[in-house]
Length: 435
Image (cartoon, rainbow, N blue to C red; front, side, top):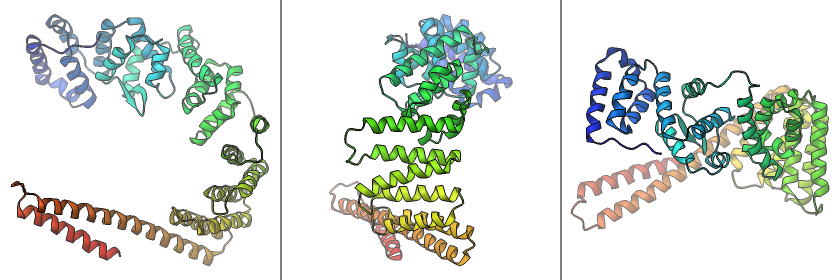
């Protein structure tokens, strides 16, 4: 049931309550709090009856902190909705790792029609918010208040806590079983299994190379390693697990003669992963295999080749084999010379890398040359970008000025048209400066 707006009789009570709050000096600090002010205004706006206002006004006046206010709001909302579902929604969001999507919440709620009104009200009073498609708490204070309101036990082995986490596990485990491995599965499933101390299921989850891909590509190396530590697996064991998973994918590949970008991507990611773990020899084999496949099937100026050269250069730099790293970077440089799209920025990055390598090898003069060339390329790239922007502005202003001057409308004055022409002259002057 959604909150309904006040009628005229209720507004009198609202005004009285607001006046009481505003004239009470102890509330001045709270009213200056943006979240407190918004929550309070929303509650007053959506009170259902004058009788309810009289009942709740004293409780609102006794709220000495944002947590107290949010606690009252949660009590109000709980009375208006299915109490069990209301509690479940808050529990699911609370125990999720990074929030939940609307689709996930609907699936967890069994398509219950009462779910959407609950979410609507919780977002209206700024307890929950949807950010990048994920429903989560607006502020840590909201999460703390929910923890207190729901009397969530601190003991992670509590039966009710395990039930909620198992709900989340069942949801994401089903997606993993069906092969629908997205970043959401990689984010939530390992975290929930680790919290439940279900080592067998956690091992199965982490052994999925697609879960690995989503975690590692998003910079979650430390998280991934920590999960394996829970299972008491060292880097050697992890190496064997992912190499076996990659081999299984290769065995299932139907046409080995054709180029498969996904396979080379896996080689690159695993090679980079083992490099981060310090397993340089294994990383070298994987990255060189990826390069071999690319050289066999791609054009010499393909950007994927540049990526392989760059990854190998990073590997040998970390391995302190600077000469070999320099050779790979020079190959990447040659590859970019014949490339056109985005060449300036890529070449500048490679030149900066070369400058750093030369510095390590005490080749000061070469390092200075590479560094100056990189700066020159970046400046050129910047000016080219600015030139395009200015040309676009010139075209837009010219078209608008022509439209204004040709318009028969009495609202367009000569002064306005002249102003636009002055703007065009200003832009044209800067355009000549860049040219």
